[in-house]
Length: 503
Image (cartoon, rainbow, N blue to C red):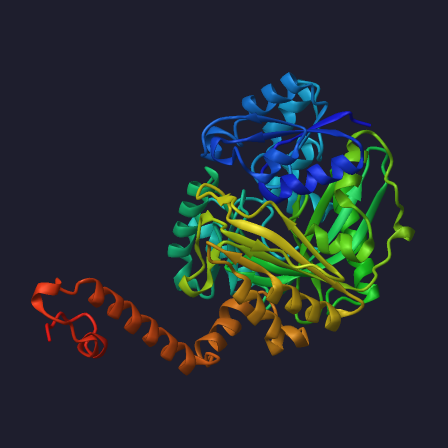
């Protein structure tokens, strides 16, 4: 086992990995940018090293700086968390060259699965079902037209190096193809420095279901069942749960089998996730493989009891998986809400700032993975996630009830958060019934929100009016003239706030 690990990340995921290391008796090394000098992960690690200015391109994304700290600190391994360098094959190559173990898959696996077209080709050869479309980038508009007609409209144009919803365009008819192709290529070039795109049949009203897998270098694989990730806003997951309400035991077994086949095709080592689209008839198609730990991994840990981060570390150290497929059982139901410093009333605009007070929910079945503390700062430079709030219950009904209770207990002041948004999602009848797909938030939930009657709206208006009135009266009194001008009529100040009038 490793004696010392460097965590090449920040925020809540760095804290999550640090906790796993401490429980395994492994010393830890944190890296931090100048703006993260007082961050929780910096304070929590056994050692911490500054790696430069706040922009990630000058700190967390600079491979030379990460490697330099690892060598100076004597770290034997690096855990990349997710984001930043977690899926960068150049970083994996460099770690191998420097004889520092990267806790993750090989550079080969990252390259193969990082290219959407190469991944489609690889898993298709392994017998995994993929959405009808191309397995090579398309180069000309004429080719796009030809393929679209073959597989039928609507189609999706997707960036070959895509992720995070960038370089995606839905095309419903031929007249939209030309402009959509230009926009998809432009966005792909801007986001990934690679403008190549491919084409897929668009699955109407799909659900997004993914399978967590684990593998070791000895050829052992296991899947940890599914996560339902269909609650998305602009292609970004915001609520995840396990198990999925639509997945039957037979479907779970079939999806797990093909996910392991996909992992085996690239000799995958560590934790990874195969994402699938599921159509109305519950046919599932391979979407992509994420070659890292997922943000939503806690819901799987809560229902299986398996610590995925510890398994990653043990496997990277050369050990065999501590579990086999027969050991994996789902117990109860878990839901995760991603709590961000964003303002739901202003189109989810990021709200960086100082957390002036913080009360974290607790009690039975509640887990909060956070990198925050009272007085800490949410910088403008990074993803404004505050925490991953997870609720577990013996069934989905209890999990929802606990999540609603936990969200109501959660207090964050100083910045706006998405907690009110999550409360409304938990109260949505569509969510409670499990009746949703990946379009739910944008096309159903927000429409219902527009027609929403605010609770106690009249009380709020009266309160606001009183606040304005008392504020203006205080300002008027502050502007009263000196005693030489005679007595002041407080009646006139009170009834005509803001107007200076001598009695």
